[in-house]
Amino acid sequence: AKKAANTQINELKKIKKVFNQSFSKAVDLIVNCKGKVILAGIGKSGIIARKISATFSSVGIPSFFCDPAQALHGDMGQIEKKDLLIIFSYSGNTSELTNMLKYANRFGIKIIGVASKPDSTLLKASDIRLILPKVKESDVTGMVPTSSTSITLLLGDCLATTAMQIKKFSKEKFKIYHPGGNIGKSLLLAKDIMVTGSKMPVVNFKTNFNKVLQIMNQKNLGVIVVTKNKFIMGLITDGDLRRELNKKSSNKNILKILTKSPLTVNENMPASKALGIMSEKKVTSLLVISDKDVPKKNKVLKGIIHIHSILQTGVQWTKEKKENL
Image 1: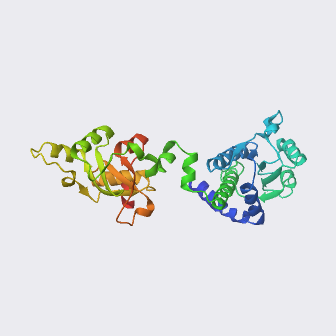
Image 2 (image 1 turned 45 degrees about the vertical axis):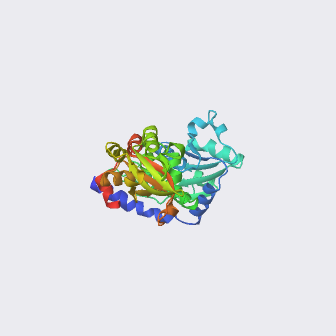
Image 3 (image 1 turned 135 degrees about the vertical axis):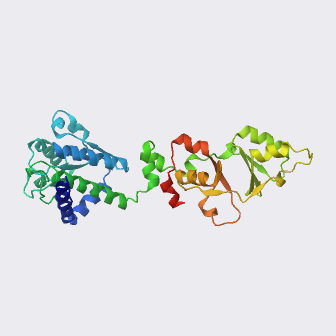
């Protein structure tokens, strides 16, 4: 296993030979494609093409895999003139690709060909030719596609990541295409899960005690945010109100029980980090403010995060994340 791994690691270093003018032109075609980026390949190359197509789609570049063998029976209709074909074949002489290449050439559909033989049928028919370096397979026979499929996959990933760089693809955009699963959860921000608008329990600092108690019960978040001239003045918890309610004094003023300078987080903080702060500080709610308000003394409330809201999304906080707090 170590020998096979080392063989592939050494062979993959040859990928740098592909980063030339043709590679740059290929990326330009992908970035400026007005249609879909369609991936094709036969056998192991087809499996690699499927994965690369999935990667393109996941970063906002419309893409799908087209099986050249099935394309002979009607699937060619999926390919339009504004589309872009990226075809993989390590040898470049796979017979099943012939009709797809003829179809693309006939209708002026751009082709990026990826193969290891410069004089192959695939590269001769391609508009952009990406020549894969010849590599040593890592199995005992030196014949099973191992290093060759790995370097093909690496090239495809490099095309995708370079296109992402040019399109200025961000975590925020990535989250749009991955709303579910662990990736989506890890990318959730404070602003994605905070309570906003009329759902927030907010009162003016002059509001009387009974009214505050009524709002506390209505909003059911366990806290009340007290404001003055629209800025956050402080926070009152359910416990604060109950303790004051149990006192015999008739002069119940919310300013007496107000906690000034409550914990605030900016709207673009990862939800997992907000959960970590709650765990560290032993609080159940955090006030969310705008990034531009973070350095200011006077802060405007944008939302409230309750621990239940975070836990319902499935976001988790591990001890490893403590280092980033």
